[in-house]
Image (tube, rainbow, N blue to C red; front, side, top):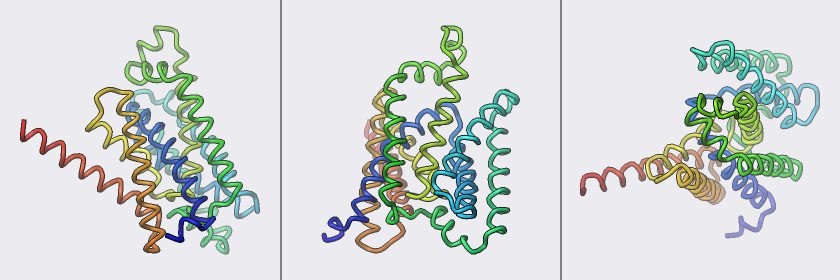
Length: 269
């Protein structure tokens, strides 16, 4: 297929593969923390940053990334304040992000069409700078996860035990939230702010069905994600469809197929 020879499609594949690797890694820890919806929150805040970038003529992905990082700090601070109602922090930040994005839209109506591409994804418009940012974030996530995998595992399964054992729990919580913010902010141009949460959670949902251990579940989540990204981008490229939508729909098909297969095995047993 000639589309594989096109530079824009090659950049799209590189960006998709990198995000397909890092998103489920962070998603696994978010699911364990029962913070699956944080993806939508940080994505909406990132959109506000992107809108500001267009408004002041600054690299939009950079301003979106900065906004997501600031939001991650705010979420952790609110989680500390409302310990019993930790999910309240997500609702507060999401409301603020949507309100700020709406305000910025009204201030710069001329760039609304450009911002819309970040809502629904525009993987085929990735340039060299975008790939460099995505690659840098991916490298950072992989390094941190590899160096502190055991600590993260202990903390998210039993935070109290981790604290008693001397782990800096608050620092690790902030680190994970910040890494998640980075991944989400660079993902919105690939799958879109409205769909980025799916790339964080659906591969994890698939892996929890077939995973035999935590490490195996993490590996399976990455595998599901990469398969969906590759199939989704190829289908979108060949039939001229929305790439973010085809990736997410492929994930849903994989989830349904996995659940059906698992139910079939249980019935036979």
